[in-house]
Image (cartoon, one colour):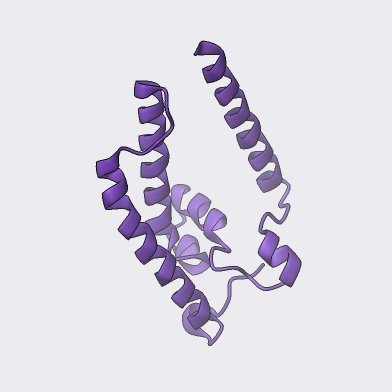
Length: 130
C-alpha cells in the first residue's frame, strides 16, 4: 500500500514537473492547436487560470472566461479524488459527488463549445491567440 502511494506521488510529481517545464518554456501544449493551427475550445484555459490565480483577472477574462468556472470545478474534483484516495485507497469519486458534479461538467462543456463557436464570429474579441 505504501509503495503504491509512493509510486502515485512520484508519477504526479513527474507530471507536474514536466507540465511546469513546458509552461515555463512556452511550449505549445494543445495538440489540437498544434495540429490545426486553430484554437480548441479550451485554448487559453491554462494561461487564464494562471493569470487569475496571479491576480490578473482582466487578462484571465480576455483569454478564457471559463477559467473562472473550470478551475474551481477541476480543483474540487482533484481535491475530492485525492481525499477519497487517502481515505479509502481508491481514486474514485463518491457517488453523491459524482451525481452533483456530472451535470455541471456537461453544462460547462456544452457552454464552452458554444462560446468557442461564437468567438469565431467575433464574440469576446475573437479566438484566443494560439
